[in-house]
Image (cartoon, rainbow, N blue to C red):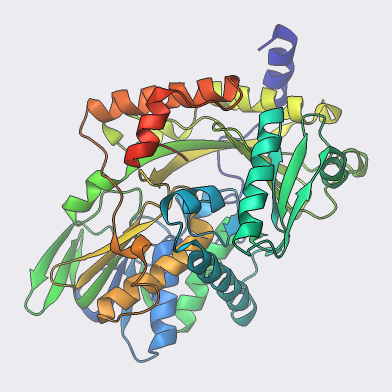
Length: 472
């Protein structure tokens, strides 16, 4: 980073508050009481992020008489569900390319199910009055290097070949800059309907209210400590009590699963984001962005960015930090060196916004798995179901995961449970220190590929062949 660029980037961060922008909201609901004593229920949902909230809501929609309890270790939406970028994607496979590489025969069905899932989210927003700034504006994958333009053309040709190009538009340099103006943009692929933008914390809080209105009993500041069999059901111990349930759905994602054998399939990745102050009308005009799409660049170390309801720009991604040992720690939630790097990249993308300042800077852990998209399973003779590994794509895909868990707990064969994606698991990550070394080499190789026209070296090619990867 040049000294002048570094100085300007540092100045832009001088007033940034080290808290997630979305969670610093006066409308944040108060915490509900913790569970004390012993409770019984038909379905216990562990985790108060999107995964648990959608599962509880869908369970009551399927059977209003079902007694559903949800427990959350802190407060609903406090973790990844409340501090993410607010990209709610139809894709269940972490993008078209990853889906094509892993499930080519199923991809049309997965795309259809993903679109129906996003439609279901949009319908729930309307039905329950979820005040979360939901805008189905789509997303543009932008090319910032010439080889990425070629890659976007190849992806579009594959999409056309499979008959999935409805609503997908290939943009040349002038067309993409007419949407959002950056001198770094060389082309784009606009999925007009497959992504919605929203306020992530407000979605979580809205789902909490909708669950309560349907009769879900929610206990906050109530972590699940231990899962054991209890007669014909399952028991979960909490700090001040115990819950006995006929069935249990685990939506704990990045946090250690109560089914210990599942833990090797995920690792935590720390992702970081900045939020600007609101843009003036003149600044907004200099960027364009009238159609309010989400954007992401096409590098391995990618940025994601979007505009908010009050005309701020969220700018995140690039660094994906894996802590040795895979431990989730609050100490990792802030990383000034990453904030500085992100700020410098922001002004390289939008030089016309020089002088704009960042109001918030934050980070946090998400769960990733070696295939970059969710996996599913059951334990204890089908009495416990889990979904994990959403790899940064959980805003939309967790609703699908909730449906899968409920299908599995009911013992039903559905179009979801018949999917190879649902029936098979990713490769687990190796133990330490092999995981640390392997992830480090992979990150180095991905950075080198970005520097060398996208060319993947022997290490990345080997990882591709065995289906292992690392992403955020």
